[in-house]
Image (cartoon, rainbow, N blue to C red; front, top):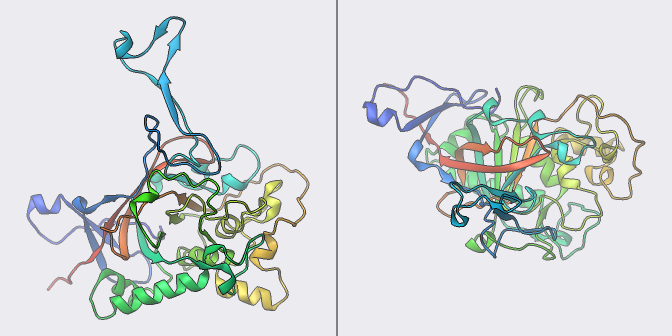
Length: 371
């Protein structure tokens, strides 16, 4: 499957060394193989911490809480005399820690994340970690409505510049990133794009983002990320493209319900609030396709996703589910350098639109060709 690690028999090595290495092959485009050390994986999640006063929180949602199960006078806590502890957790995946969501987040009905992706389908995928500096929305040609000129946004120009900087830094270095950039045409083989916003500091962990108007992605930036994880064939029926960010949402905190970045990445129109898509994505599959559509007089992603767009009549949800997922509220440690990584995205088996998740990243190294 596109972007998914494929196991290959490694070259002969000591048993204890082989047991700690993960060999990956780019399934399309690139001829090179890469490997990651099992001991190099870095946890990029923010934990749900119901016992702590200072917690990750956003959108005015409450802190996570946990209290012993009670039945009458019985309190299921060892401290209260019970033989075991049995706490009942109250939490919201969209606020209290790292979480992964599918298009079910913006579709009607009881749709679930598992319709778009499950960890078992691709336990390890190739991921590109890129550090991006948000910029004033007013200084960009990207559009976001409703938005303000002084909003900080991850724009398509910012992402392109970060990719260009990574390309320049990797050139001639023989790194995994340079191999991928040279041999895959930039837009093949990736299973995920991870955006680390700058400045990067530990204050992102346990922050209350409510009312702070955090940075967000423009529709054009979301489409660019979507293109980076899109299968070269354009058929994503057997693979899932991932976007990971260290923000509480890819969209503006108060956007009037437009959800431009979500809908652009998932490929869901505003009518998705009531009827969703009947037969697949209708937004451009790439920024280039979007530009062509715009030249032909079609609405831009931002036009299509503006809050003023009329809602469609209610209808039964279709069978189609975009094979894309967004993971928010990550924390990408400075211990991880920009470049190509192996991503093991773990997720709680909860049948809702989103679930708590735990992304693990490990740097990939190019495997030397056998003599």
